[in-house]
Image (tube, rainbow, N blue to C red):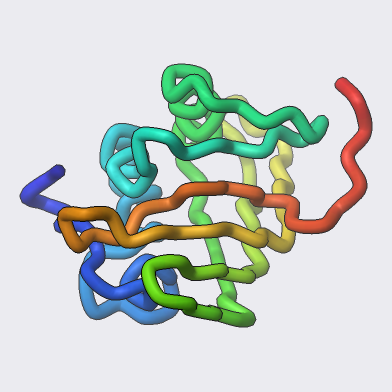
Length: 140
């Protein structure tokens, strides 16, 4: 865990629009993918654009790292937070928009449906990162 970005102790602290502690947005904008990955449980899965469930943290880090290396702002608008005990569902709209490092236009966006869980240590981390929510995936 980073001293710069403590882990959330409440599910709403994960959410970018409630900035009681450094959130997903601040970690993303730090430019350090490891800061972002601290928000993921060891058994977390990432749902790829083609619908694959990725469990390898090195692969998840590479995917998230590509977005962070664009150097563009992540904008997020939380629609819902539902909590049942130690599990939370976070529904949010997000986008990364601007000119990439080579001047190319970049437009990434989606409506995420993520699951977070409070661990035995009391911190909340992503268990499922599904950044396209219920969107129909096309095979790669």
